[in-house]
Image (cartoon, rainbow, N blue to C red; front, top):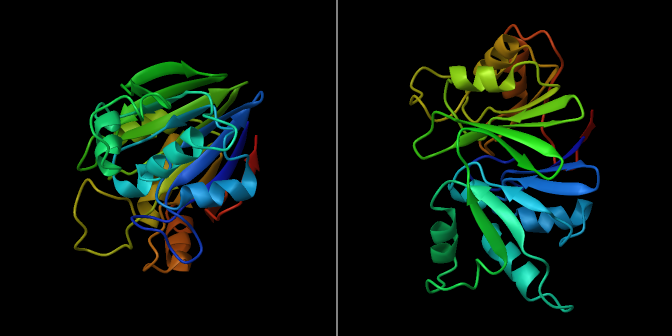
Length: 249
């Protein structure tokens, strides 16, 4: 399994990264985890624009889904004719949300390009992957995803506050892409985002192999987020997500 960071900025694109998007590949199958604003531009640096076989959207905040609207244009109006229809997994209202975001009338235009399928807690098969989802603690319907293939496992937190379900989902994963959107301070709202320290604590409880901190807000100091995670008690390697970083496992 190979994972490439397409975008890792939290809440809005930063100067060095679009918002959340991660490319997962195995056996010639390519799947995007989220497609936040700016992701389609970055994707073209690392992968064929139309060579995507499936998309999973963790939740419907713009920094995780909005570039699906422009990806619809790319797949629908490319010079060689429409690209093959692909499945898009997401919360129940994903199709309506995306159609309204592009201000299309309720018609089959976007659904002719994307086969929208609802995510639900539990396992499903997507290409060569077994994808297991669990609801996270966030103000909207939001999922964490565990992707398994050939004895290896990746867990992607999406957006979440403190979550025992995330610990269970990530148990024993080789790679843990965990959000660390908040700087550690006493006035943080609950059930929204994790700090670097909390990401490290979740990683240690889950016994993961490697922790990569994601959803890094542009106004936070990433070195402080990394220091918090390293001081959390997590005993494995920990690093900041960077656009273009590749993980093979």
